[in-house]
Length: 399
Ligand SMILES: Cc1cc2nc3c(=O)[nH]c(=O)nc-3n(C[C@H](O)[C@H](O)[C@H](O)COP(=O)(O)OP(=O)(O)OC[C@H]3O[C@@H](n4cnc5c(N)ncnc54)[C@H](O)[C@@H]3O)c2cc1C
Image 1 (cartoon, rainbow, N blue to C red):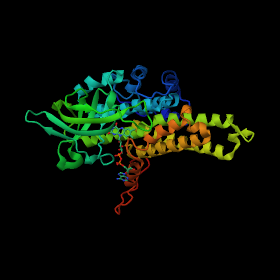
Image 2: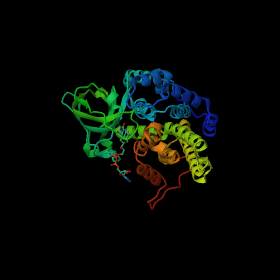
Image 3: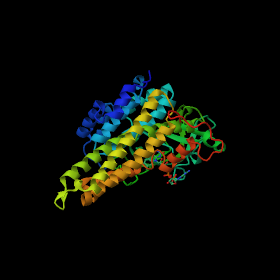
Image 4: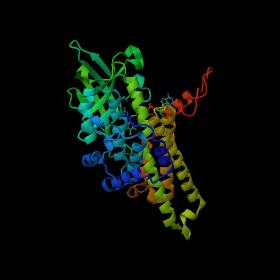
């Protein structure tokens, strides 16, 4: 049975920075992912699977443990806190919140039985491919096509871009248009094993941060799949995508909350230890106020992220909450990582201390799961901004 809201737990998660579930994950991460890797580490991935991370949202019958969303986020927050490798935690979260969400929500019993247990055990890795070189924010503009052949099978052609984990993936959920005349209603999702003929994974693309989480293009060139590869129904792709991306933007950023807390602690430590002009730099108001602002951003982001999680456990819509949580967390993470560079001076800019690397990791959050502008568009739309026939103002709990 799907977990429901445990209000006491949700409140506890919001009020207590030392929830045992979070601390257990942080301890695990310090031990197993305490160093930063420059590339994907499969052994680390499998260890995380053994720790249970990949099965947190998957029903028991398909190999997971299906705990509540609040509990899942406590675990991811802990991973972000304990791990010195945000790319690794991001890659786990990306599979759990986007790819697995779509498979759990829309997959047939056979698709779930085939893929979810190995995904939870870390034996298979899954990607989620919507973006294209010419269609990022505007997902309805995708040009990857799926054409039905005379024998009833489907032929996929097109190029997907920036696909997280594609270079190491075993299976991908890909979105293609089955009817270009119907716009978003003509988009269909497919579950395609990576070794399918006609599917080509491009080379790893260099990027600013998140180095242990590779991304690349996937090219479909006459890639023929059976109709059993359709995820959900023909034409249901946009709805499947919207639901999975909403889960991603609402929950994935719990990992960044942990990273923000870890960076805050480093800054406090630095402010106390480093002396200039005969005194600890923390005694300068410019430095101490910077740290106070970092704390404010972190707490504000936490409240929004756990609000989204609690609403989800309640069975309520999270469209507004997800956009707000994503905006606050991703933008705060960048601002606070930049503050950390200020506070650490030259050490903050030197690669060896890892501070500027945290900034580079955080930058990605402004873009994936929908850019900041797109989140603001969602919030403004839900508020009825720009509409003369503004409906009843939204109640706080609804979206
Ligand atoms: C680390 C990382 C991992 C990713 N992983 C995946 C993945 O696994 N699968 C996948 O499918 N994609 C993935 N992406 C791609 C990501 O989803 C897109 O980059 C994102 O949707 C933005 O698209 P774009 O880069 O084409 O930017 P564009 O859409 O070209 O946007 C460029 C600028 O225009 C602004 N803009 C565009 N439209 C509007 C509008 N209507 N109103 C206001 N401003 C607008 C944007 O906010 C932005 O500032 C990943 C990206 C990153 C950085």
